[in-house]
Image 1: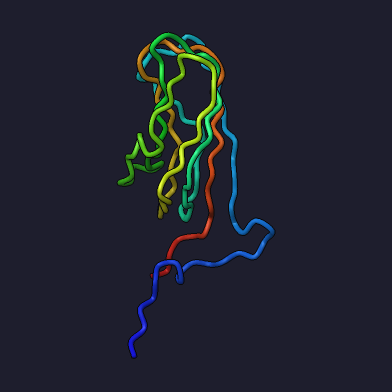
Image 2: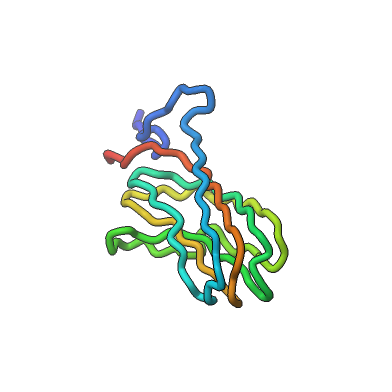
Length: 137
């Protein structure tokens, strides 16, 4: 009988109260920030698996939205600036964006890109992630 090793068998399984689920809240205050400005909110190490984000925001301005994603910190191959999708920020509010788990094997930056107009107000992003380390296989 053959044995196939699934990718999930290749990572550590943690036994804490909530497993290895983690959250990190990152924020910035925009002050007349021009459209198409990329905002570096934080860095995540190689071995991180992203599950989604929760976004809280002020009314940033007419026609504005925020696009959330990741990119390589050190000129690597990851450039997924819309990984978590877009959030309309014309009115104050919140949004939750769940994604198919996305594992990264290099350090990445969480980037919010302001779209559509000049933005002023607070942006807060809570990242839902797991840290399993880099696969050995």
